[in-house]
Length: 224
Image (cartoon, rainbow, N blue to C red; front, side, top):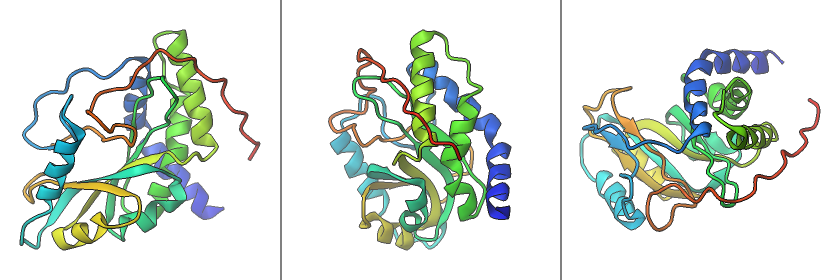
């Protein structure tokens, strides 16, 4: 129980940041501000081109630590995060709840060092979404369904921002469920690079999916 309370405290510490990201449930994303350093595909970029860029970014011989985006082929449960991170420092956990033909924004949760924070990121995101203020009824329904599925421990972790050496990141790139790892130059600083996740369902071009489908009723969540 003490570990769980500690993890909950960590989740609360990042709640303000998560809340800002969660507000994206109200509207699709706007075009990104131009940034020198960026993890993730450009808007409208062919996914094949991005994957090739990501592979190329892993080349090099320096031994310094780099920031990197690990994109998964499918959503995984939060409990599986440590085995996919290979012991590297996790900086951000990327969550996405897919709903057929309904736009749902990725949720990016910054976490401090240690597995406990990463393991609790999904519950922290679900808790914070309760305080979001969506713009209209549809956005409110989407937020309710997304929150319920996060609380029910859906396999909704789709990416991680990591920090590690090139050799370590290259080893991870061939791991289970890993779609791509894109690496920034070693001189990239924390908090100064743009981040746009590559989602598993983005297979042709990096654009948001359609938003014309019905929103399912939130699944009931068992009492803790």
